Image 1 (cartoon, one colour):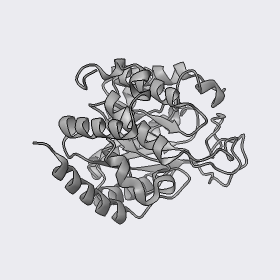
Image 2: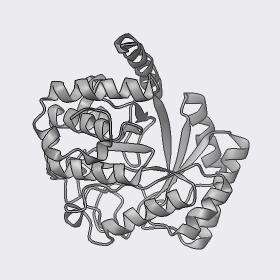
Image 3: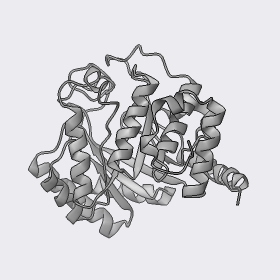
Length: 315
């Protein structure tokens, strides 16, 4: 099977039968052919933390689990504007407002919409938001305020999802993504690997993302958090992670494959290998309840990766 064509229709057996080297070689070739030496950097703010009603087994912010995650209401506009300004100065091209909970009520949505408008007007950085399950009308309000991209992960495959969350459905997540696309927003949607799912589940999640046509796919690697149901899960091996990155690149040749939570703690000094496996974007500056590396280190690493990509280009 050739690399050109509809990547969403690759059977899982195609990937299962390839060695890691074969996968990485094909993925890097596709990355350079379709996306050149582009590297996407973004950052987020944990704008409202904790007391989430949902029971996602990996999440420190669920009110059902006893963790050390911070709990606070929505940050002030001044705080958010300062963080957006810092993000822009660091080299990030996108700034995302993230809140805990299944979804905001109307007053909270209105406040966040005002934040989006202010960021676009005063800071000039592209805004994203991750606010949970939203309907088409609410997503339209955000779009009118100036939001460029909505983030809403599938988290895992449809068949594995009930083992991870029981308080809402996979179908609700899919519908939110469809609604965001329908109102004209770009969508950033991916998931978490290392929850106990199989490699085929990772394939199935990527297949759904490809069929939805999302523009960016964050790939999080579980770092087990004390107090959550997954606190004793073993960390994924380097081979499993690299196989997943390569598989996602081959299935989503147009999309940004974005390394997110867990990249520092799991990949450590070997992060560059993931960018040789097809990844070409990353979340910098820390995550919702865990810290990342110093931004300066990531910016320096990005420059080195671009040099390697340029040297690897066959044209």
